[in-house]
Image 1 (cartoon, rainbow, N blue to C red):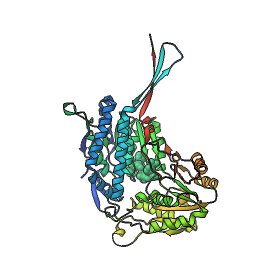
Image 2 (image 1 turned 60 degrees about the vertical axis):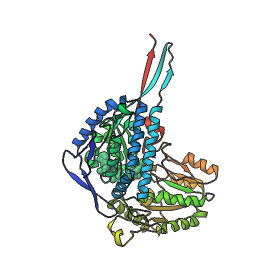
Image 3 (image 1 turned 180 degrees about the horizontal axis):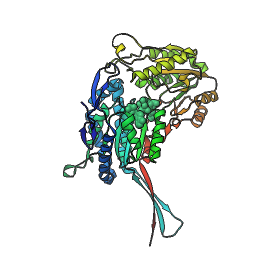
Image 4 (image 1 turned 90 degrees about the horizontal axis):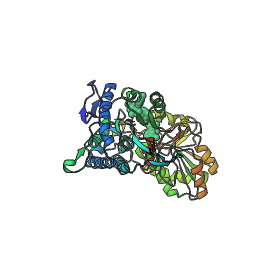
Amino acid sequence: MAKMLIGGELVDSVSKETYEVRNPASGEVVDRVPKGTAKDVEHAIQAAEAAFKQWSDTTAEDRGRTLMNACELIRQKSAEIAQLLTQEQGKTLFEANLEIHHLLHGLEFYAGLASKVRGAHVPLPQSGAYGMVIRQPIGVCGGIVPWNFPLTLMGTKLGPALAAGNTIIIKPATTTPLATLLCIEQIQKASYGEGKQQKTLAKGAVNVVTGPGSTVGEEMLRNPRIRRIAFTGSTAVGRHVMEVAGREIKRITLELGGSDPMIVMEDANLDMAVKMADIGRYFNCGQMCLGVKRLFLQESIAEKFLGSLADILKKKTVGSGMNKESRMGPIHLDSQRKEIEEQVEDAKSRGARAIIGGERPKGGDLDKGFFYLPTLLTNVPEDSRVSVEETFGPVLPVFTFKTIEEAIEKANKSVYGLGSSIWTRNLLYANKAIDKLEAGNVWVNSLHYGYDELPFGGVKASGVGREHGPEALDYYLEPKGVVIVNA
Ligand code: NAP
Ligand code: MG
C-alpha cells in the first residue's frame, strides 16, 4: 500500500483509513492510499515550517543543485513512475513518458533559475540614502493539483517554490496520487554538496497529503500557516479557493478551465494545422486545460480541413494506455465521460452532426473502461453547451467564418481566456489575433503547448497569476523594500 510523505517519512493517515485507486481503463485496483484528514495537513505544516528554517537559509546555488539532483533521481525511477501514471490516470505510456519529460524539463528550468533571482538598487531623493528591493521566500506553500497532468502540474508549483527557498505541501487529486508520491519521494532524497559536505534536502521541505479536496484541500485553504496556495483545477473550485484562501489574505494563483479557440485562415500551412488540431484536441484524451476546444475554419478551406482531420481520427486506436498500439486512453472518470456525453447530446439535439465519433467504442476490454471515441462536431449552434462550456474530453466543435474580424469576435465569446491560436502566413492577421484575442497565451502557427520558458495562465474565468517562466518565481517571492541611510 502507498503511504503519504510527511516530514521525510512515509506515513499512514492518523485516521488509519485508506481508499482504492482504480485504473480507468479496466476498473482494476492499482493500489490503496491513506485517506488524509485535516490533522495530517497539520502534521505536514509542522514539518514544512521546521524545514523552512533550514531550506530558506540554504544558498540559492545549493537549492538549484538539489533540484538538479532530484531530477536525476526521478529519471532513474522514470519507467516505474510512467507505469503508475498510466495505470492510475489512463493516459498512454507514451503520454506518461512525455509528461515525465516535461516535468523534468520544468524542474531543471527552476534549478537553473534559483541562483539568478535579482533585486534592485534604487536611488532615493535624499542624499546619502538609497533603497534596495530584496526578494525573500514566503514560507510554507500549498499546491493543489488536478488529475489530468498530475506530475507536470505538481512540478509547476514545487519547482519555483523550492527554487525560491519555500517549502511545500502537495495535495494530488484523489484519483491520481501514486505517481506523484513516487516522484516526491525521490525529490525528498535529493542532496547537494560532495563527500562529507553532502547534505540532503531538509526533511519536510516537500510533503504529500493524499485524500479528498473537501477535507485535505479545504484545510490547506483554511489554515493560515500555509501562506500561499497554487491551485490548478476547475473554475468552480477555483472560485471557492479564492473565497476561502482570501479570508486569510493568502497569496494565490489559480490555473482554471479554458475553451481555447484555434483559428485557421485559408492561407495557413494546412497540413501542419490539421496535425496540430489533432494533437491539440485529442492528446491526453482531450483532458487538457490548454487544448483546441473550439475550431474556427475559414469557409473556403473548411471541407478540405475536416476531411483530412477525420482521416487521422478514423485511424486513432482507442484502448488501454498500457497497450503499445493505443493512441488514446480512456476518459479519467466515469462522471467526466457522462458530462462529455451530455454535452454532445445537447449539441446533437440542437442540430449538430458528429462526422466522427459521438459515442463510446464497444466490445471486449473497451467495455470495462471509460472510453469515448474521438469526436468531431459540425453545424454546432453557438449557444450549445460545447460552444459555451469547457469540454474536457475528446470532442471538438467546429465553426466557420468569413473574415478575421468575425473569427476573433466569435473566439472571444467565451467566459474563458486561457490559450488561443491563429494559423496564417499573413503577418497582419497574426498581429491582429495577437492583439485582440482575449487569452493568456496566443500561439501563431504553433501547438497550444505550455513552454516552461514562457509565462502561462489565463484571463477572465481562466485564472489569476502565472505559472512557468521566470514570472512564476515572482509568485513565490515577497519583495521587501529596504532604505539605507549613511549616518
Ligand atoms: P477540480 O475538481 O477543481 O479539482 C482540482 C483539485 O482541487 C483536486 O486536487 C481536488 O481534489 C481539489 N479540490 C476539490 N475540492 C476542493 C476544495 N473544496 N478545497 C480544496 N481543494 C479542492 O478539477 P479536476 O476536475 O480535477 O480537473 C479538471 C479541471 O482542471 C478542468 O476545468 C481543467 O481545465 C482544469 N485545469 C486547468 C489547468 C490550467 O493550468 N489552467 C491545467 C489543468 C487542468 P479531489 O480530487 O479530491 O476532488
Ligand atoms: Mg473534479
